[in-house]
Image 1 (cartoon, rainbow, N blue to C red):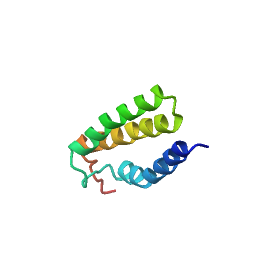
Image 2 (image 1 turned 45 degrees about the vertical axis):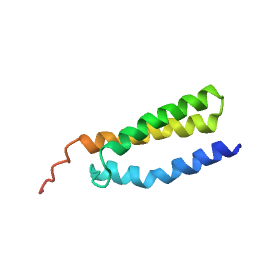
Image 3 (image 1 turned 180 degrees about the vertical axis):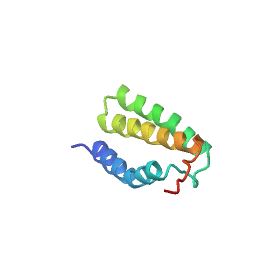
Length: 86
């Protein structure tokens, strides 16, 4: 396994707690709205660069963070779920 792929795997694993918390709560209060949008654009470029250079680690890293930040964008701009009293 090359270093860029190992870095991608570790970085991806580090996002799971935040992703789980965001999806479970349906809330994303702590991020400025522009941050995940710019991150999506930056990681599209990073994935394209990894693809162009045939570096699977950089490609996977960029692709994952496009998906991760897209989820954050979705939850940032989606109204929070209503709480029910059962």
